[in-house]
Length: 246
Image (cartoon, rainbow, N blue to C red; front, side):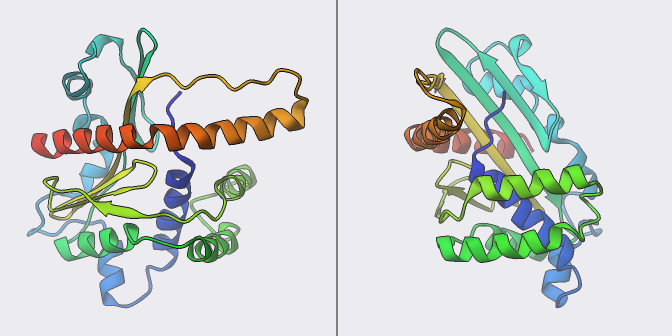
């Protein structure tokens, strides 16, 4: 199963839902929310549907030296791949693909999306998103809204920080969980990748159901910390390969 860092899931909700709700703001924000590409834009709006073309099995295989025919493709929130080898696992994905009407719109979104936030600032954004969930037209069933709220609770109000990535697109930054945010002209997208040892299983011996849930949570958090450097390196590597193939 593809690994989605909890902070990445939270950013999907915060940035995606908030952008739709704020589309009536000033001109710059409206431009940033406009996904219909203009005549002068390099990429058109159809790019958002081309996740598995931007990230093909051949590109993943060449980047990480794995057999293309052994990759499992998952079309969810973009395009993702997984692979299992001898005590090795591969996860690679592209998501949040969007072509804006002009480069300024993409740059505006990128600046907002990659702004480091304190735990308090993240909590404030989470509270705003939670208030909007019930009114969201994107989440058109109670099950979807309930699932989104559960994701918010699961993520918690952890601070998020970003650092610049040189040599990838016009702008690129990587978050502390290894997610790489990229802008190329009027196109933006997010990349996650990891090739390395499979996560060790948590030790549930002697634990009841409640304890197992807490052990799993702590184990996942610890593995995220331990694997973050590799995720940053692999995500940056994959992001560069995607940009080079555009």
